[in-house]
Image (cartoon, rainbow, N blue to C red; front, top):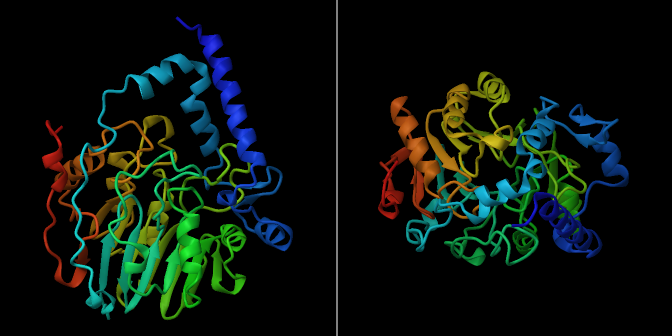
Length: 386
């Protein structure tokens, strides 16, 4: 049996080698952190901690608590055994998940005084509001990492990039690989009519990949901008950022978003743990007609940065939500729970609170003016429902 200290040293060495390779490879996937004038502008944010030289959460102890609770190095052998090698959960589906390729048509853009959307898996949303198309946290690459063999998606995207309707905005929540995809950004950079709306600092990644500064709108928490008739409100989230493992973390801001047009509104949580910001946002901007809520890839060890199932419901109520759509599941495995646990757990809790829950299959268009009941489609993939 390998001694814990020996395994610990081997793991540390391997991790150091990987980080060194990443650091010196010059990989475009890493993007770029803010520099020069961009860096000076970041430092003026009230959410930037100048002594620590990084963005921080409303609760400044969040990341310290995550490190303390995760405690991988405290018992690496036990953690590897429990979380990876001997995990009995079904962390990935054994067959392709159902898709709807037919309901997205030329009428999707016709959304005057309405909201239409299609969930594309994980946190990627295709949104139509007031005849404008917003693509949110789009991931069309084969994996959510700088390497094609790591964190692979369950199945190809339901639509090819060229099959999407004309995009007006790309809205990004933060710079992690499962939310900001270089391949997708470069594809849409060819369409000069698209505007990119991002949190502070994320624009530096986009500029590294060729996007012109004039097409990027960077926003701090509580900033409001009206662009082409759509009101974007950058709101807090409780999370972190970074594209180089443990290097250069928290150099760009993470955010949730409130988007309004006329009497219509939706909320997109990005990645977030449960905290006071949900109630702050609900009190200031609620009610929210549609709430897309971080509901998967959770673990009690990092609950500060991802909602646990019961916290999804608490946050939804705090936001004064009217219709709940669970996101951050169904395409990538980042945690060791069953891949289907998020909808199972959220549905159970939503029914207890009589909450309107919308769970479309991947690619299915939902029209909020003509709302139909969605099925618990994941149940046929589960032998035993919890």
